[in-house]
Image 1 (cartoon, helix red, strand yellow):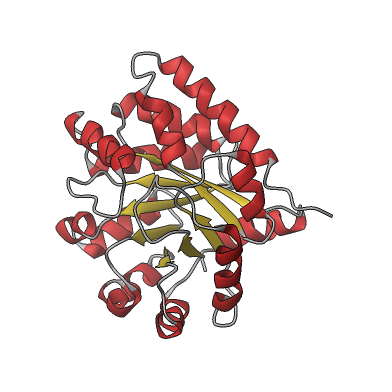
Image 2: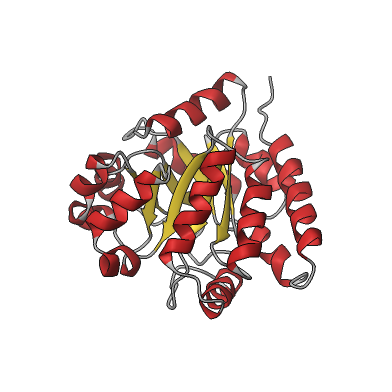
Length: 269
């Protein structure tokens, strides 16, 4: 596991809370504004997921799809993503940084160049939605050589066989998708999520973060009571769309929302 990600989860455990993982798409609504939004969000969270804008984000709902479209329309390139990651690392040396997206991006750049450049700016892990555990060997050795955790997804439909595969292939943490659907949909039933995490823990000792559909502090608190981390994405991204011409307002809204969610991460004593 990435040393920094391990330290993030150890720190959260020592403070009796879950890690708050926040997602934004790089370059949305512009590269310059995106950097400010990411830096503002990073102040309140434990791990930041930097979305790699892509033209066909099939696992994402309309909110994040639109964010990718805005980012691409703004001319966002991989160099811009790396610059944002570098700025976050400079300002927040202890935060976890994960690149999240689709295999097309590193495949086009070349997995070796992708990994080398990501590691050089302080990225800790990579989550490629369309590279499942069965195909993880495509880049596993390259990521390990550059100290990048290869994060695996599991879902309500994951069989025990696939859980074992993800446990063997994954590193950093396991991202558990709370529902059988796209980002931004309604979160899955808490009791069923808890049961599934209990099953996954029979196969893996990695921290488990739960995402997809988390929109309220109440939902976040429910998940934080048993999950190692809670991922919030579409909720943060949606705050950009209603204030696209008011950068300071977006930053303030994100900071306020993230601070409230961070307070909900503490577990009952």
